Length: 193
Image 1 (cartoon, rainbow, N blue to C red):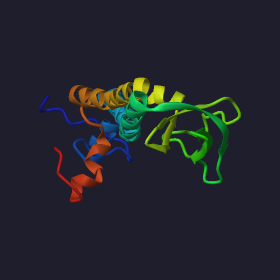
Image 2: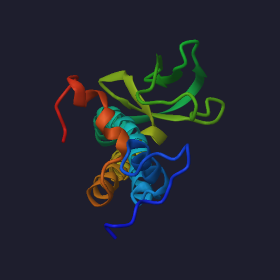
Image 3: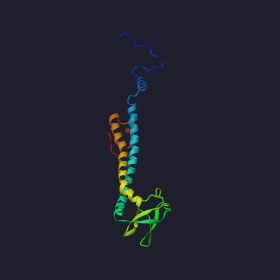
């Protein structure tokens, strides 16, 4: 009531309405948005990893697309020959030797991976009759014609999904507090609200 004086306060207790009281109230009150912020930050980190992997997947798709064209051409018009000798060179590439019309041909098969090619086992190449140096191992021909592109595209889609999830989480839960400190929001790129 208006006629009653306020109760006495201790020597260390700040006056009502002072900055110390407001700060103490903020510290004491639990943050209701903390779980949402943690979720938004986690989603952003997963998204960043997913986008990095997506870039790698797209790079592999582009690389495989180049070899896929060669594989289709060799699968259609190429001829086969048994490899007489195969080795991994000092440069980390596969090199094979086979015989075409009584002539030795030594070449590096297109799209071969030295880590997955068994140079000690029996190998067969598919080569271009007009240019036997243009050859590819038959296992690689099958891979690039049938599997490579589909696998790369699926990997790209799967790695982009975290970014989509992050956008949804940020829409529902709000952006994490660190978002306002991101460099491109301070003159290094487009301003994002």
